[in-house]
Amino acid sequence: GAGVSQSPSNKVTEKGKDVELRCDPISGHTALYWYRQRLGQGLEFLIYFQGNSAPDKSGLPSDRFSAERTGESVSTLTIQRTQQEDSAVYLCASSSPGERPTDTQYFGPGTRLTVL
Amino acid sequence: SQQGEEDPQALSIQEGENATMNCSYKTSINNLQWYRQNSGRGLVHLILIRSNEREKHSGRLRVTLDTSKKSSSLLITASRAADTASYFCATDAGTNAGKSTFGDGTTLTVKP
Image (tube, rainbow over all chains, first blue to last red; front, side):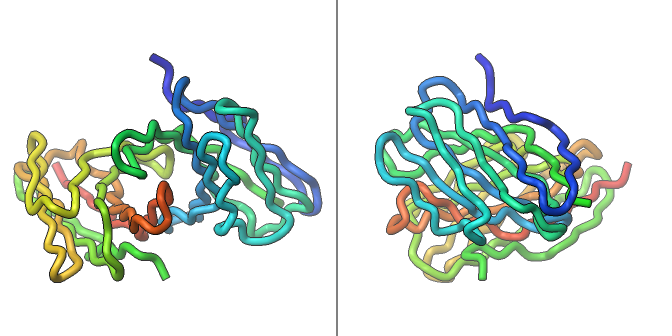
């Protein structure tokens, strides 16, 4: 079946503009994660959605970052007033909780954001 | 700082050799997972080892877990040029259910 998809694959924007990044998780996956990965670095957790529970927003770096999820489907990550340091690949992952809280995460291809 | 930290940061070997990467973490975990990433894009899950397991195998991959030392190792045997990628460990600390913490990764280069 279809994996996690993200759009756009690449986004170039000017400093100060707002951007929206979209993630379509695997159907039936109740958990959805957003990560940021700067060039040559590891994954930085941003936000986690699990079913109807309140999202874990503890990784959002500033109030310019927000994310929403419609039910157990699409999620949108919004970055307002973008800054050059926001340039990174933004990765989305979904998982299907089984017996344990954390199961295998399936990653999308990412959105490469470049802020000029 | 990151919960999981990989070591070494970079590793370069010849095709056919074995590659060993290590991961250390700080707090108790429920499980530890290894992922692979090509070209800075999406990660691919390789293997999960639970806290009550000590060793797991999957094809040419062998993962060990030492909870007393809070460390894990990933061994890739008989490496191939196609194994060139970055490898990350991710830990689930249990108290933050669903939130895995990733390290900065080991960049493996396998020369043909």
